[in-house]
Image (tube, rainbow, N blue to C red; front, side):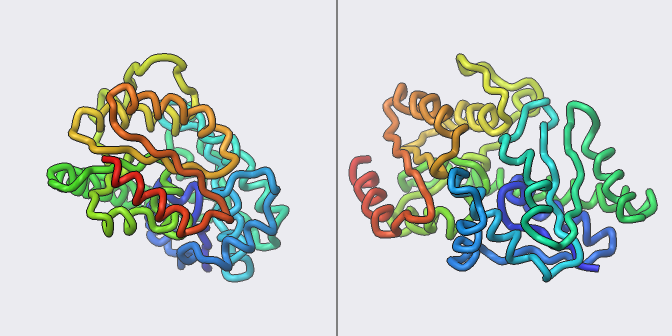
Length: 298
């Protein structure tokens, strides 16, 4: 049996976690390909025109998987381990997916205010009629895989932070930062301009910061990504940063609120800041011109 996983939104919150989990359970996993023009066009046609660009990309990945897998995995992510809520658009993904395609949707509600992730994953495994021993092995392997990736990201960060090139921190949601087609190859462009791009979620955080959070002023965001980004900004500001770029999907309501607070953190410290809004109409040349101008001002 094949389980499909769309390479968008929730996937980038825990890259490689889900395919590791299902592979250890004994299934063949099919992850949709890297975002391309065809996937974007499919998503734009299927999505509500008022939804954000990142959501449109997700629907394109879902449609690509349709009829290519026996089940497609679309979890309902509600809250993280600190009880902070994910983007409201995440809440409706499983139900909307069931309407959009005929392929059966495999789902589970991940609300860590109510139960630990291990318990939710165990329920998911039992839906697939797997025994507890196999499920426990899959959970442990997937969690170890995620820890390894976080450790590697931390090592890469400390290597990059020592670079003599201008260090530019890229701020956004993982599904914007790591989707090269969606963000028009931002990392590649900055590297060619002889800058050192740093992804905001690579910044290692102390366990006390993760569990308790830090006070950064008002308001105290109840959104998972809002509080997470502000924590990471507080940490990266301890280093010698040359500039900051925030990438936001057009019509992202949460980003519209968060952007003002992100920009203030850097401008208060006189660190140059650039805000880029992306959608299906964003031109590669226009982004390139703005990046070149930004680098020239550093």
